[in-house]
Amino acid sequence: MPLLYTIGKLTVGPAMRLAFRPTVEGLEHIPDKGGAIFAGNHLSVADELFLGTVVPRHLAFWAKSEYFTGTGLKGRFSKFVLTGLGAIPVERAGGRAALAAFDAAVPALRGGDLVVVYPEGTRSPDGRLYRGRTGAVRLAIAAGVPIIPVGMIGTEKVQPIGARMPRPFTGKITIRFGKPLDFTGRSDDRVSLRHLTDEMMGEIQKLTGQEYVPRYAPPRAQPQITGEADGR
Image (cartoon, rainbow, N blue to C red; front, side, top):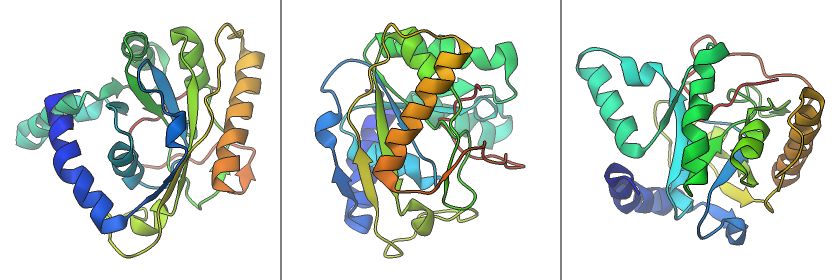
C-alpha cells in the first residue's frame, strides 16, 4: 500500500467514520487478496473518500490526466498527492490516449491491486442511475479479474455537486457491496460487452434502489471526478 494512502487510512479514515458513521453491508464480498474491480454508482465526489474509508485494502482510483500534468505549486502538489495515493491517470478525451489507463490498470489488477471504476462516466445529475459504459467490463475481461458491484446511498446529500467538502450530520451514508461478477473468458465483442455491462448495472441498481435511465448521463462542462471509465 502506498505510503500516502496508508497515512490517509490512519488519519482521514477514522475521522470520516467518526463524523459520518457510514453503514457498510457486504464486506464479505471483498477478497482478502487478488485483483478485482469495484464498479459503482456515482453520486458525489465524496464517494471516493467513503469507499477508501471502509475498504481495508488499497484502492487505485482513475484520475484525470490533467491532475498529473498541472504547472506551478498547485499542479506539482496535485501530482505528488495522486502519485502518492497510487492513482491511475486517465485521458478523458478518448481514443488511443485514453487506452493508456487500461494499459496501466491491467498489470495493477493482475498484480493483485483493486481498481475503482464508475461506469456511468460522471456523477449522476439527479440521483438516478444512468446507462453504464463498457470500460469496466472490458477491463475485467482483459485482466481476468472479477467485478464487485458497489452501491453508494446518501453521499449526494453529504456533499452535493458544487460543495467543496463533505458536511457531517447532513444525511445517512450506506455503502453496499454485491457478490462478485465473474466475466472471465467471456467474449469482448461490442454486443457482448453491452450485454454484460447492462447485467452489471442491474446488480448495482439492486444495491441502490435507484431509478434506472437507459441512456448515458449528460457530461459535465468541467468534470472533477475520478475513476471514470469510458467506452460504449
